[in-house]
Amino acid sequence: MDKIEGAKEKILRKSEEIDGVHVKGYDFSGPLEIGKFIEAYKSTGFQASNLGKAVDIAKKMRKEKVTIFLGFTSNMISSGVRESIVHLVKNKMVHAIVTTAGGVEEDIIKSKMPFILGDFRLNGAELRKKGINRIGNILAPNSRYIEFEKIFHKLLNELDDEQKKTGKITTPTEIAYRLGLLADETSMLYWAAKNNIPVFCPGITDGAIGDNIFFFKSEHPEFKLDVSEDVMKLEDMVLDAKLTGAIILGGSLPKHHIMNANMMREGTKYAIYINTSVEGDGSDSGALPEEAKSWGKQSAGGETVKVEADATIVFPLLVAGAFVD
Image (cartoon, rainbow, N blue to C red; front, side, top):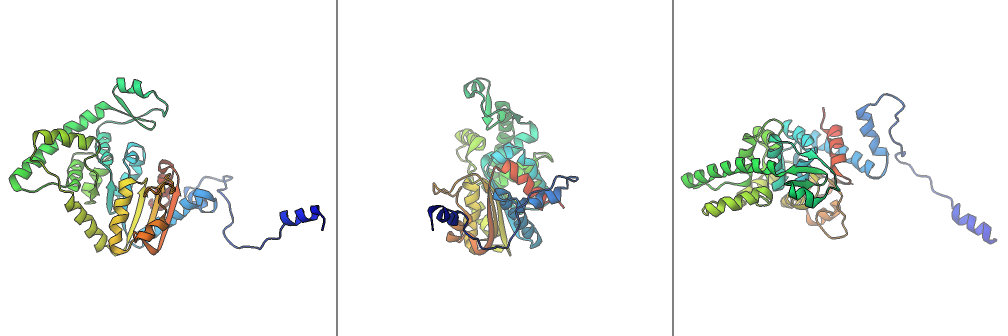
């Protein structure tokens, strides 16, 4: 065999025939049908197919009446993803929420005053002079946080008075509930309070909430918060559930808090991660579902998927595909 024939044999090696889903995207030749549009993601490939799998898993969670824990970082509330979250909470499609302090405070802020779309490349020093804070390409003027301080300071006074009278120490879930009672129907916390869906915030002393607690406790050193009571409440929900599932946007504390709690029952049956974190640095944020299985956070035989994508793009599509009846 000469060298040309040898090269051809290597390049044109005979393949085995395989069965499976044919790779194909949505056909735009006819009228747009949102259901079929989202269904086509499953056969598109790459992260689109992972999104299609996420939609299927979410549908199974609903069909099997799984106790769903929704976790997200505060930037989801900063963005327009807030409205997708409100839809789930308003319609009782999730059963518990875990978020960061910013997810609580910014939900209240946005029920009073809007954030404004800006640009990723705005001059930070100039924004600082104007009292304007930037979250990616979203602008949050200091006036929003000043308004929140008025609301939260009043609540802290009420909680402190109750603590003095009854000896009862408040919890982060109680703070989220009470703030929800002060919000309007655009608010995630409002619907969580109305529908008795607990909002867990294990990092309650972060952000503007933490700033205001610092100022308040400087004048009221006797004021306390009980985070241990919320740990008991979360674990009771996990252990009392017939089946559990998790939908987690981003990583960080909300992701770990949900999955760590589910170790108590050898893991969730279902889990959907949506984030852009990588696994190479060993962070829990970037960890794949298989890593969670090694800890017993995710059940060995459970169904999982990680969609490596911006949640502001992907999560509304997931809601449209699995949570709109």
